[in-house]
Length: 353
Image 1 (tube, rainbow, N blue to C red):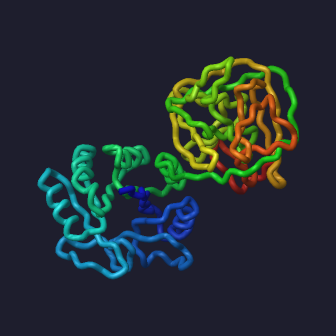
Image 2 (image 1 turned 60 degrees about the horizontal axis):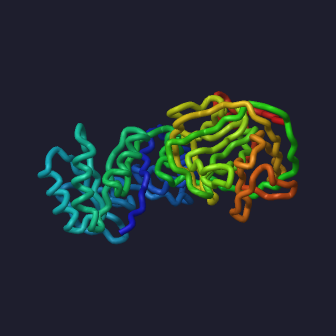
Image 3 (image 1 turned 135 degrees about the vertical axis):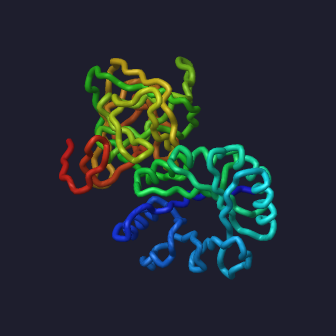
């Protein structure tokens, strides 16, 4: 049975910030939060709640109750200190619980492995609690099956963005960018990113001269009669170019190093996190490529070589050496904002040329 993974956010914000924070969560694709339903005053919101209240969609029952509630999902919270507790969870789940919330302390992985092994063939969802983004990722990958949901308390929308990327549930709206200019700009330093992951055909990294306009630069999984495939590599661009980190901030390519995290996107805009294994900065002949999406114009300075490829709007790959004015390639664009050490500053005026 295929299970849908859910990131369940428990907002750690005051009452005055609650609605705005929930609206931001919804815009990021979060559909379930751990919160009192009476605080959900935005009637247009489609976010559901999990809470010890019959007004919630996911109702957490006390230990004495087990009655079904029409139109609701019911579950219980359990503390796990021994295998005896795991047996109790299993017996409770068999009686018709829709979900269980597992709270573990010092021992986390082994107890959850045992619970997943016992419950993975029945319809009871397994939720657990995580303290940080990396722990969320670990909980979702236990036994290669993972739990069904992780409750994560936070007051940071950037933490939420980073966690969604780690789960492979973050999407970017890629658009068709029309090439309007291509010219040689002489030699410059370009950055080659060797990741610690195998990249597949159709995947690349967003790179651009500006933080609000980036091209999807394809990886080197495609070989030729002159080159062997390097499916872990993206020949990204010049040292000044931006890319996006999993937490939503931007970084210059020159800042990346072994252990840095970057986003890899497929041609549909689905993002995943990968770690950098090595960065190589070398002097090479460079090209300036400009493109347009609506009224936004962006560019990239990339190495002038056949192995650097973009993805065309029809999904085909095109080398920068064969790119022509009028061609359309995949890119990501949004309204221009200021940046301060990679963080977006929405109210700052900025003009980039």
